Each structure stands twice: as structure tokens, then as C-alpha cells.
Image (cartoon, rainbow, N blue to C red; front, side):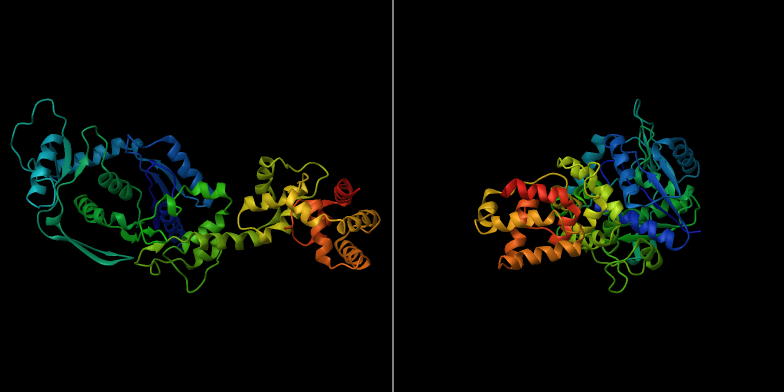
Length: 460
């Protein structure tokens, strides 16, 4: 059975790059009827926080990336890493290294001065020297001195690295906490991960991990390294490009399905399809169509996708998302006020983000005063008698959209005016703005009492 995993470090929020990696791993497992595992790699004791862990879990939940097992935490598995590293020591694949930080820095400075690549020189690899007193050693891996590591990356193709390019990496720090390259190997083997899908910043780690796996006599998983995401200007993605927390997109009013659709198209494609559901993604997803080139983050495309999803989203669901935003604007719906789902249905076609729906809905739940400039422009001596007539005739009209629309046209005709010459003053008085959906539908939702009261308050 195919088993994939997402293994973030809880040193910050779940960002766009991490979310895309999680999505690809999730979609590949779901496509093949496999299992998706969540693992929290919390061995960076100085930077890992409970808040970051929660932010990752919240982001996964909001995006709908459900996992079959986990979350597993590396810091709860220290005994297992110790067990494996002791086996490597017994078998001669690892050794204790007593070199101090100062020694290693002096070594690196000398190598840099000679124009060499800084690397550990193996001084304790086969040393018979007496260990210095009071020094807690690290445990290093005995990287093969010759030969090479070759693996077929499912995105990048065949990759070969000579072992002579690799030094003896640290497996276990002096405090008994595993390094990334060791912990990830033990976890992936113990959890029977078959396909490791991750960012291509890990390509250089893969030969090291393969050597450890071989030393443990394990079967190798498949590797797929996904190219990074760049900003629209071709630079590495940063906060100014939109590399913010996934949850910030929620707070800004994006729908999770829009972000999932967008992330799926960042470096992967299915023909020319731009809009597709989660179910279609699972049906179509494969590793063969992941681009080998970096993807470019385009916020305008994300905005367009969100607009498309808002148009087709369920009105009742959108209403519940908009409700707290209206409360923030002092316009919380009350008993007897217009049905919020109906209001959302009327407004959503013009909106790109949820707050835009909330902004447009305020006048349905509390009066909005138009600016003096708008009033001066539209509430003229010519328009006031029209508004008085309309207020009077709205008292008796059948309260449905066609009847209201017919009345607006009739009043305009009676006064020798075009519809715009009637519609704009009505909008300014009743809604406080010149921007509304169809006026007859807007007035219908506001309700007879509200519309007549607002008209009379201004023109009587």
C-alpha cells in the first residue's frame, strides 16, 4: 500500500510551500487508495513551539487535508532513535566524535582559507585516542569512502552523488536528540513510508539518508522532490509575495477550496484545467505532471479563483462565514431583518473575498449615511418629489421583485425621467451608496417598512 507523509517542523506557521507539499502528498495517497501520515518534526528545541504546532494542525484542518495516522511527534520517540543509533554503533556504521565546536570552526576556517568546501575531516572516525575528559560526544555516521548514490527522482529524474562529496554527518547530538537526517530516516522506515514527496531543498539530504537506510538494511522508498515556489518577480517567495500563514488567507476571506485549487496548480497541471474540485484533483493527480521548473506565485490568479468559488458556493455556508464579519461592522443580523443567505446570494457575484460581501451587506442591517457629496449630487430639487411619490406608492405595491421593478419604471415615466435618474437617488437614500445589485431585488430584500422609512426620513 502507498503511504505518504507530511513532516513539518513546528518553528512557524504552515506557509504556502509547506501547504502545497502536504497537498501533493495527500492527493497522491488518496489517488492510489493509500494512507497519508502527519508527523511533527519537533527536534529543534530552541525554535519549536506549541503555537506553531497548533497553527500547522489548524491549517491542515482548514484545507481539508485529513490524515490517516498521527500526528506523531519526534520528541516522543527519543528511545527509538537511541535504539537504532546503538545498533549502528555495534555494526560499525557509526562512531563517537569528541571534536569541540571550537575545533570544528577552526577546521572550517582553514578549509575556507584553502578554497576548499568546509566539511568534517573524519578525525574521530577510526581514532584510537583516549576521549577527552568531560566532553559529551556526538555520534556520527560512517559515510562510505568510495562509490556513489544513485536514485531515480520521480520529478527530477536520475540523480547521482559521489560518496566522496559527503562527509560523516552527525546522527545524534550530545544531548541525545537526533539530527534531521537521522530522525527522518528512522521515522520513514518505522512508518513504512513508500513515497517521500517534499521540497527540492531536500535533494542534497537524500543521498545521505539513502546511505543510512542501506546501513540499516532497509528497502528504499521512492523520492519526489518538488521545485520551489518563486514570487511573480522570479525571486524566492517571501512575505511580500504572499508567503504568509495559510490561516491568514482564511482571515482575509479566501475559501479553502479556492486555495487548494490554486496550490494544486502551482507546479502541477492536468491539461488546461484551471478550475477543478477536490474530487477531480484526487482522480487526476500524478507525479509525472509536476513541473521540474520552479512555480511562480500569482496572487491575481488566486483572487480570480476565489471569485469563481464564491459565485458557486452554498449561500447558507457563506452566510455563516459572513455573519461574524457583519458583527464586526456593527451590522449583526437581528430577528426580522433580511435573511442573510438571501442577501449573500444577491451580493456574492460581485465579490472577490468574504469581507467584500460583508461590506456590501451592511446597509441591509443598519442604515448607511451617504456622503455629503453623493447627497448633493443625487438629492436635488428634481429628485425629491420623485422619491416622495415612490415612498407613497411603495406602501401599496405587491411586495415582490417584478412588482417593485414595474413601479420604479412607472414612477420614472410619470416624471419624464430615465431609470438611472430615479435609481441613483433611491440607492443613495436607502442604501447609502450608488453601488448595489439590481435595485428591485435589493429593495425587496430590505423589506417594505425599511425602504419606506428610509425614503421618508430623507425627503419628507
